[in-house]
Amino acid sequence: MLNARDILETITMIQDENLDVRTITMGISLLDCCHSDIDVMCSKVYDKITRYAKDLVKTGNEIEKDLGIPIINKRISITPAAMILASCDNKDAVRFAVTLDRAAKECGVNFLGGFSALVQKGFGPGDRELIEAIPEALASTEYLCSSVNIGSTKTGINMDAVGMMGRVVKRSAEMTADKGCIGPAKLVVFCNAPEDNPFMAGAFHGAGEPDCVINVGVSGPGVVRAALAKAGDSLDLTEVADLIKRTAFKITRMGQLVASEASKRLGVPFGIVDLSLAPTPAVGDSVAHILEEMGLEACGCHGTTAALALLNDAVKKGGVMATSHVGGLSGAFIPVTEDAGMIDAARCGALTITKLEAMTAVCSVGLDMINIPGDTPADVISAIIADEAAIGMVNSKTTAVRVIPAIGKKVGDELSFGGLLGTGPVMPVSVYSPSKFIARGGRIPAPMQSLKN
Amino acid sequence: MRAVITVIGKDMVGILAKVSAECAASNINVLEVTQSILQDMFAMIMMVDISSASVPFDQFADKLEKIGREMNLSIHTMHEDIFNAMHTI
Image 1 (cartoon, one colour):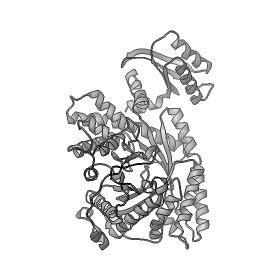
Image 2 (image 1 turned 90 degrees about the vertical axis):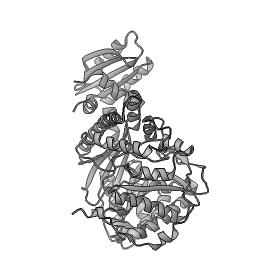
Image 3 (image 1 turned 180 degrees about the vertical axis):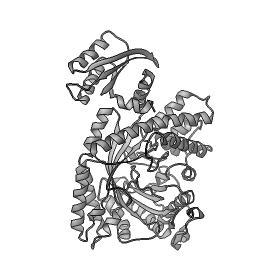
């Protein structure tokens, strides 16, 4: 039976601590839209997406009203676009991108992810065409998100693709310089990309997924921070971990409820709940503030990696029992410009890219939403990607890079995207050159960890 | 189907009357009412049966929220499922 304390706790979490379901993402397979004529392919794609997702936003809003839980985003992920593009004689990826954008707009979703290529071992048909088109595709669309998987524990790292992606990121920033360099904010370079991730910009619908599926991403850094704040400074770290687990359990149960409700109402199978703590720039919704609540003066000081490791693990342990299927990225996110506490820590110099790199070894993603100087050479960006991919490859985890070269800006300047993508200072990168290393190309062989059979 | 109505704020005359009148007008049966002071707030929690409600649930919730604003109270109407999901295993 429900008691008053539990009821009030839930109300407080939603009203004061920014508890919400971050996203309901519908994964749609486009494998049956392949056609040698790109016009036919595009019209099949448009029809399928708008048919499958026509009620997604409406249903999300209804669930939000009925259950009283804010559901912030409704999104779509699709089969990596390069796989579909491969079937066309004329591989005009930008035309495909514009079609996807039109479909997203028609459905009313706020992002569509999956303008993607998986090239961890090499380039298949359509992959190069798609990757080269990313800057123009992101510059000529509004809702489209793109990702490229350039490495995995099983395959090693495709350094030719890494070299290419440094140039693509840079070019993408240049082509959207008049729009606050928004292009690379919608572009993720992955190692070990999950195929059922509901979060943007890295969402895509993997080839092993069913025709259509509902994945849900929960949120709630504010709830965790508030729980720690209420408990005070007397808890030791085992007790802190227990408290985070209990809180994560509750957050995830809510995600599971929304996921099963959405799946039932839309008549689409439930895929996974992603147990991530996803911050927003709103005050009180910050992962950095959780770490600071644990006792760090500023996020990024020594001790941050340990605190983050504890947080990330406790979130998983608490969440895993609360849902029938866990997937996606599942862990704490540390996107700098999307997290009020990270923004402050970066501004005051407590948080640096080198520290962030260490933090990515123990949390769910990678170097995320970091503004770097606009004159950073493409091969330095490639080297940042290679470092992150190496961490992911060796530790059998997902890592990613989403850095934004702030064109025309230098260290200390601010670059703002608005909305959930936030704002942040331009952070310094090493001025020493990795160009010869990147220019070598080839593949970094898969590590011993890949030999599990 | 049941829902939970919570009223949080400063105690005053007529809260229960107003909220239960609204329930009656929408053919919603009040099953249980508890009042307490929790976390320095006055809190009234009502368990109601919405299975034969005469208005859609979201409209009912909006109406109560509006009444709450007029009386300077915060009134939330939420489906019972959410509380069960979060607090029972």
